[in-house]
Image 1 (cartoon, rainbow, N blue to C red):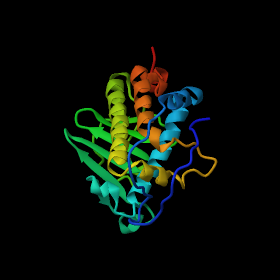
Image 2: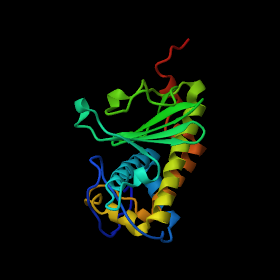
Image 3: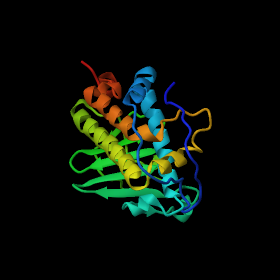
Image 4: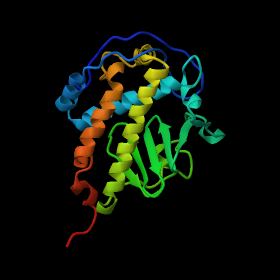
Length: 238
């Protein structure tokens, strides 16, 4: 199947009224062959969808971390929903150097960079959707609040690919930092509730490597995510 299933330790507790949280020590030795084999067996898209869905869960648990909201600790801004959107969870945004930004939602992640535009990765598709806008005009309470997004044109494919790879590398770096600063037991504990016996699981020890592996596969052939016919299908032909 997609991901291996392994046991981890425990955790749980509330903090912010948004998503979900994690905790503790050093990474164990990773067997890269396990992760490589999973990617080959299930295909890169299915692999990526499962990995992103688990990652979004983890960000939620990091928000609810008992010791404090981890996203806020590392520099994210939390935008609480207005009265007319009170049923929505908070939006988390991070400003990065060189005009870059990350926006996290339960239904996906947005990454923008000045002069290149932005990409949105939907949680259950992992087909990057491109916009020429590097920032969002308003908080994306729902998908309807996102700017117009579409498959990139031929002239936009390089920008879309580089933005997608940058986002993947940012996620990989995020998971490396989690283990270095909070510990592998913390990440394991946040995955316990995720493992319901039916969902695919990527072991805590392999998450950063899994994102690196995905980035390598996409860098080698962006068409695994966006075949060229998909980008130009709606355009007129002679």
